Image 1 (cartoon, rainbow, N blue to C red):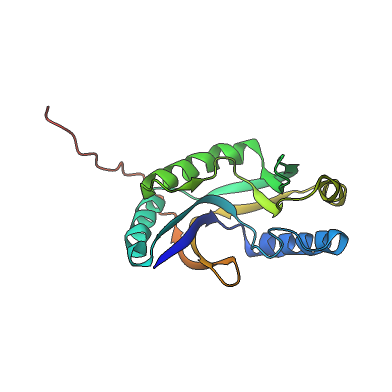
Image 2 (image 1 turned 45 degrees about the horizontal axis):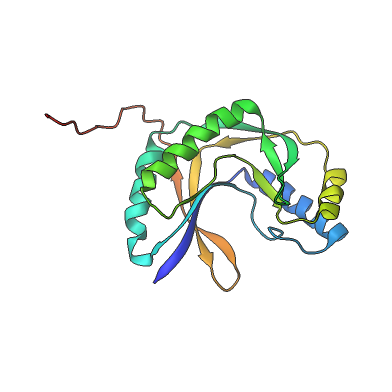
Length: 186
């Protein structure tokens, strides 16, 4: 059976709890919104595969994460996309560290149906109306949070609840050994 999966970075439990409170504060002002019940995360990618293939992809994630070294992520601003998404953004140094992790992880999966994220952020809400976006902007103006990015999370979509749940975590191994690349003689 085909299932939908997502690969993400979770901030610390303290930041997850703080963002949950932010979402509840926003909901008390505007009512329900997309992403209200989603656990705070930075999306790397999403994909669909047959459930029987998941172990192969877990091995790919384990291998690529072994080459990553933990680093600090600093969340320092709120922002919005024209799609109506309201989010928390990392500072420039954090973006510089996050983007190669995202790109290398996406590349390691070698899937043609990958939905990729290229701009690291933590969504507070999605598909807000312009009015609700204005409310979010007035409610949240300053943020200054840090967390240690030290693993990647694999999640599976619960088709009934329409929410992803964690199925595995892949720690960064700080293994700087270059990967063997098979060459060609001709």
